[in-house]
Length: 275
Ligand SMILES: [Zn+2]
Image (cartoon, rainbow, N blue to C red; front, side, top):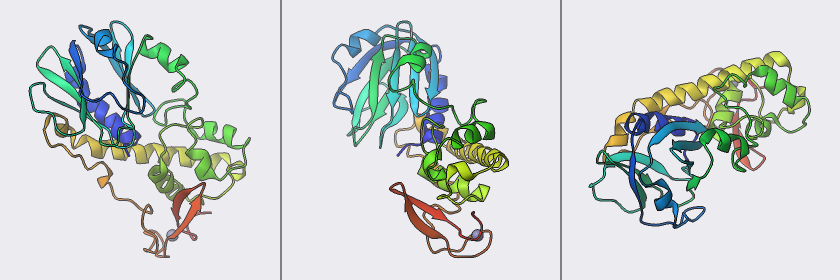
């Protein structure tokens, strides 16, 4: 599933081609995404200039002269910029054709993605759209830090891993990143979030930022894939310290790593290093 670093990498990959671009037309080969693409969408976007490109959580927002496009990659979606006349492959459901002969092509085998035109500007959509308005701060933004986690954490009693993966607390900390960050911060994933002090939350916020940034940097090495036909970027190539390593030795102490379900999600941890 595309996580925040992949969406950020996608944004950086497509930005050079979309900045200042103009939409010629939208080709919809299959409108059946998570929400069906309304038939009038093509008419809404045709002829409009791209005014801005941004990301909020795992949503991409393309600001147009009028309104914006809200895009989510769902479980299996990807976006690439390709020549508009290149033959679409299976599951290439949409082409946002630009006037320069390129197109932004949306590929999504499982069709859980979203591609919606909204009447609002991206700024207004972030504040008001039901999918965006209740989201917590961006983990790489200035509103996210240990103080923020500590302030919210004191009011709840859930396991810290569930707390971290709650999008109203902070967006974009998926299961892999929660596991890796808690290991690096030395915090047991099942520890109640109200029983963690400010200093530990400050350390946790720092490592979350570091883990996500490292992942984005890795994704950045595959940017060329966005203009190639067969781009299949290895986003999760970064070495994982605990995720998926049940029974393998902890890289810090050598003890076998444990697996436990916390809130329906697999949690990997070291009993010696995480408290
Ligand atoms: Zn250990």
